[in-house]
Length: 257
View 1 (cartoon, rainbow, N blue to C red):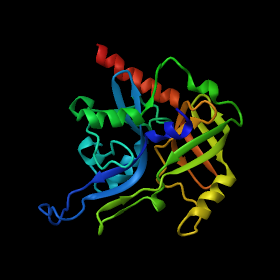
View 2: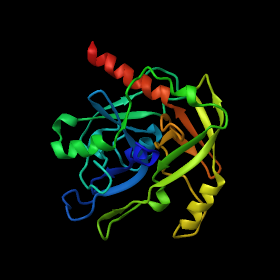
View 3: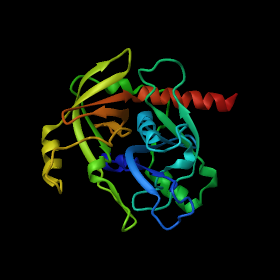
View 4: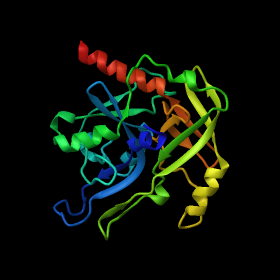
């Protein structure tokens, strides 16, 4: 798979809410959108990966604060309007808050229609081995790429009852890493920023708000190296994918016990 195909694992995060004033109102379009997630597969499992603070922020707006999967909606594939059935919410264990901004949902794949499951699996990022250390690719100034759904250009039209998606791909170079905390920084490619701003309908400055939860890939190999958790017009910060591998490994160990 090439880079563009691997970035096909990216999805917007959508939330379904109840009309508090009129719970029986089934005519209104009950969705809003904020944040990015992506699909990861390992063995027979599929996980939805995102940044924990994205869900926390939506909790302030009415989403269930316990991150119940009943509130979260993720599309099966690009162009599809079918949602993936989500199961257990998985978070980083322990008291270390430095990289607890990582959250996974396990997909209830066994409940899916076989055709929809095939579409989902075909676009997920496949982790073949948890023993591979992604950090070995994080050398100074190495070129990286991410894709996400900035809030400004990805909206829900409630009148027309449709989701308008404009995913944004953005390159950058590694500009620093805290090995102990496994939090890394990348500097965006200014040419990419200018291109995005030029293509913008509003001709406004690029705002990465909404891209938290995006995958960060090593441009040359296409390997997943991190999960974007914050950024501005100049830089982005991401959690090393080694943390993600640890979370999945812990989950598998619990299943084996």
